[in-house]
Image 1 (cartoon, rainbow, N blue to C red):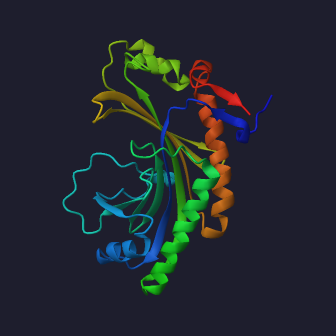
Image 2 (image 1 turned 180 degrees about the vertical axis):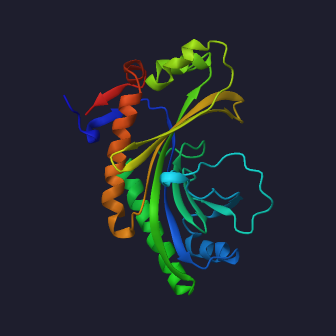
Length: 262
């Protein structure tokens, strides 16, 4: 029996962050524009932080994921504008505009669900496009998008050894053949319909809590999607992504995360 994705709900999900962004072009961006744009959004995004840029999308439209990159003082960095509600970020670099929802110790905001995040992305892109036009630096064109859900599995609470990850995700069951594995990473991409689905597994640490964790990312992307198609296409992509998550996650995981079909 098929279940509508709108009815899928976990009472105790492992979800820690969602990153949703578009690939942009056709603007003449320079480092001074970050501050000028911040003056437009400062009421809602008062804090500004600077990071290394995310590399361009790879083959087949697969988005690159921020990681450890040894770059020398990039001329045009990625800037993160933190919201008045620190659960939300707006990220900007010359070829990307992204929004994030994340769990944050100073915010009680739960994940607002995809439709609200989609509205926020469209609103922020339109604001950015208006800024670019008024600043005479171009009319930004959307060329694709990526959507990523980041799940955290915590050491001791969720797993003791890496092999325990197979209890939660069927595509990681092979880890039981390596019971002594300490660290590993996995990056897998495969097509579903005309989208590219990507799953990434890597080890990390919660610095404040000094707690090891595994980050299980599942994302989807597509090139050749313009603004007119963005709302419809990203809704379709999210539906595919939820179905893939349900397929990859196990019955044991659904029970522990308290799956409730509403």
